[in-house]
Image (cartoon, rainbow, N blue to C red):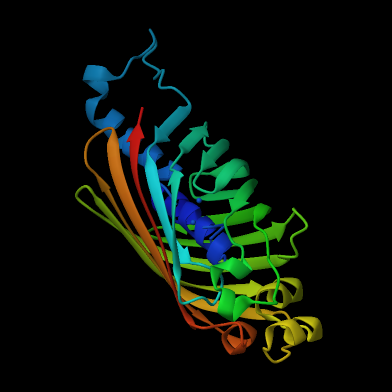
Length: 291
């Protein structure tokens, strides 16, 4: 399950600013909880007779807390459809309790309402870096107004079978910034090789009309102020994308992770006069120390 949680944090960050597409933003993520759980489990299994504290009955007293911290860096388009990139440092937190409550990547606080060895269903409050400021590109964005970022509610579900993990995530703007609703579905295949973990798979993101109007639409008033043609949008597929992630365990306590989402804007997003570049690359890198 470690690949899945890593992937969820990554995609969260990228879904929000990228799609979401943070970029959850993307804060998509960080060295993730399931990875910490599996790494810890593997270490304990291999050293239980020597270092795992036990009670008189032989039961493990391993803490239900999993805590990891370290530096992280997000690289994402400055705004949806931009050809310019933003570089955003962030604290890569990886904290969970009993696989129930967690704070990971862009997810400030989350809970797995339903959980099992192969699945999770839950919700989280996710910080969203996704925004657009006229100052990001004064010549191109003049007259369009600013779009502020803020917290979003994330609802998620995932299921793992063998090496494959399928997931669906819904992000809802709860800060009144007119960022609407986006839904991403993804399928990831993971393969461990020594201390490495490789994950890759496709996905698609849908956005409602509020989201597409905010980031890709041009109203009559905006057209008059900016010189761009009016452009009406509606709900539909925002992008198709390919996710890839590599994680490496340097030691029992240290690991590093690099994740990237290669996206292609579709339909309303691709044809908008605001869009300068149809292809998006969102990257998250982090180094994590596990206590």
